[in-house]
Figure 1 (cartoon, rainbow, N blue to C red):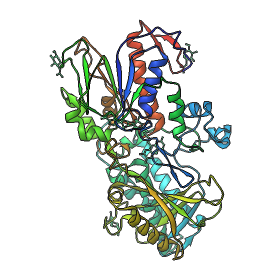
Figure 2: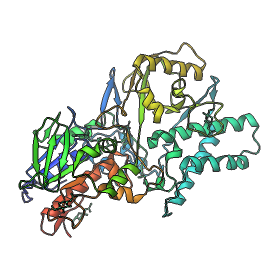
Figure 3: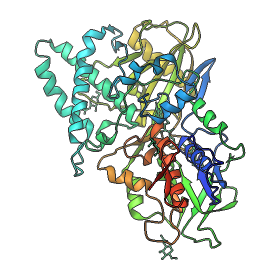
Length: 510
Ligand SMILES: Cc1cc2nc3c(=O)[nH]c(=O)nc-3n(C[C@H](O)[C@H](O)[C@H](O)COP(=O)(O)OP(=O)(O)OC[C@H]3O[C@@H](n4cnc5c(N)ncnc54)[C@H](O)[C@@H]3O)c2cc1C
Ligand SMILES: *[C@@H]1O[C@H](CO)[C@@H](O)[C@H](O)[C@H]1NC(C)=O
Ligand SMILES: *[C@@H]1O[C@H](CO)[C@@H](O)[C@H](O)[C@H]1NC(C)=O
Ligand SMILES: *[C@@H]1O[C@H](CO)[C@@H](O)[C@H](O)[C@H]1NC(C)=O
């Protein structure tokens, strides 16, 4: 970062970055700082940030895309940038906050409600939370397992939790046990949102433990996640990005002739010659368009991994109320359907009961007095169905849901705002997950540049960055950021004779 462009040798190699999300911005930023003077970004939409997208509901900041800085501590480059740019609140900056190892479960103050319209005490429901996390933590033991077993996280939880419950909850009566097991179904649906999957039955038991968490209690950006993007962008030449410029096809392997090995063909017909292309389009987009996006087509092992890795939908529904119906210190509201003791994250009737897939609302810290906003979470096919509905119908269904759980029919949402990531043509979903039979090799294949090593005299024609190319921080902003830096470093090292820039932008011998 600190390396002055003037100090570095200038490099004339022609680099085109496709996509202006965090990974594309990070790649371009590092290349420019290292003296590459022929870099441009082509972005399909009219804005930068991609899946970092801050919006507003009235005067309240809402995150349409990424919400949390997962693991805000020194090891997280997003934390370091956000801290240096002054984007974090005082709590996130405390050493205490950075030191807490939460392993993905923020220690939030919950309020629980049941489908018979009753408030449940946090103490009475805590055994459900404990048991769920205990069993989920046990999946960690499979991380060393080499073979693709095809077993799922959902199946594992369904097979272990009831047995353990029988032992641990011996002294509880039947209705209590049933309610606690239903609470585990709620948590399973929460996990679907975290993994952007329709069901945890689709998440590979071994693959699940590829994900690594970083120390620190998750925090948000008080003035919006997109501050990260605008600060990085302000350090780049203003004309670096061409907006509204979707790329239709990347012609590589010299198929177009000319001196440059790659030609980037845009939707408007423009053809741009390049020595290197860093492709950062989302995995969802790749799944849908790979057959037309590359000429010649991708090698089979890369295609297999694109199919193998999962990419699903997680949406949010922001709901604003006149006054709060939750406790002043409440951070998350969990909804328990009393008939879900079978430990399931699936809903029988998607059209009639899609709101059953909403397990929780998080409470948005009021940025101004008198604002009372919740954020509902929904994943999978029900989220994709919700996206097809008009906002007014969504509002009606959410109102009905809240009436059912509070028993109070006077509560009416004022305004709502929902995300529609599945129908975003440039994303086609939310983020990636380890689908059944997927392994570390797939993420490895995702990031491998083209042409395959030793197959051409012109290496590094197409490089791959983006969230779904990170071996352990996939599905996150910090993962995406690091993949951008990684691919920039690959080019920097290729063009510098025997020296490479490390993460702090200092030259190191290789
Ligand atoms: C609802 C939701 C919640 C999330 N919550 C969190 C969270 O709390 N914490 C966290 O760390 N992460 C979260 N994430 C994930 C995080 O947002 C992503 O991992 C990260 O932003 C991805 O960055 P990227 O650069 O890989 O991809 P993107 O940001 O998607 O950037 C890719 C860019 O490529 C462009 N593009 C696509 N096709 C073309 C084309 N043909 N030509 C030109 N341009 C094209 C797109 O328009 C886009 O701008 C969340 C994501 C979603 C959707
Ligand atoms: C790339 O070009 C070389 C030589 O022109 C050819 O042998 C090779 O098969 C091509 N590779 C692909 C993937 O098309
Ligand atoms: C559990 O119950 C729900 C709701 O009654 C039902 O839709 C689902 O199919 C059941 N799941 C399993 C695994 O039995
Ligand atoms: C980068 O290299 C410099 C000099 O070798 C070293 O002092 C520094 O700690 C390195 N930083 C990282 C993040 O590796």
